[in-house]
Length: 315
Ligand code: ADP
Ligand code: MG
Image (cartoon, rainbow, N blue to C red):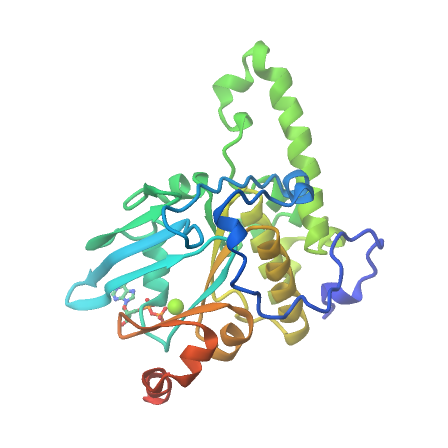
């Protein structure tokens, strides 16, 4: 099996192998609350926009605000009174033993499930109960597993089919002569960005490969690349490292750090505590549907309740 590392790329990768890539980021960049502007390169390369409305208080702006979230499935309360914010430009980890309610919380935020109670706000607007594509259009992206139909298409075709709110999607517009030119222009731009994102994730040499032939880790890179094409401000990842071999996991983490440094915000749902502890500046621990602890990795490590929850036979 050949991972992407081994294939000789053309040497034009924009990603440097930085020694700092895997270090926990500093939480002190309060410039973000003021007038943080995105890395100009990124704006070009990824089409990211830094809509960074300043917060009311002195804290860093929190694009995602979850309040009093509750989800019942029949008699089971999967998520109970869950409230937290995710601050801009951070890597925040949501961890907890199996069955803690992490995926349900993720699905409530991304519109896959409707909450029984509670609200989700993104960039200051309530998004509770919106459809997943509406939430994605507002800049809150999630990754999707490559569906079976997409396995029979190439990596490049997968990227071209990535969900996006572009003019070309509206057929009635594309057949109107006035806008035809702009549609064509947009498609050229789209193709250019597809290549830039593939290059960023170092999977450009796999462009003509069928998605079904990719390794587990390469699929994860493609899933993240597809999510980036939606021009998100923030990405939600549910167990992004599951089934990924250690060397590719390291690269995936480096890519996440690099994107964070460029102003993207991440909420990563994981059950692997060490992975989150070593890479996130803030960690939220769930247990039995509730938030058990919310703090820095150091604070979480010292928490008796957290240790008990993980050792309590429910892992
Ligand atoms: P985690 O992702 O932390 O492992 P989940 O959010 O998947 O946990 O599950 C939390 C709880 O909710 C579990 O007890 C699980 O069995 C239950 N649950 C999750 N999804 C459903 C569902 N669709 N129907 C019924 N129960 C569910
Ligand atoms: Mg889960």
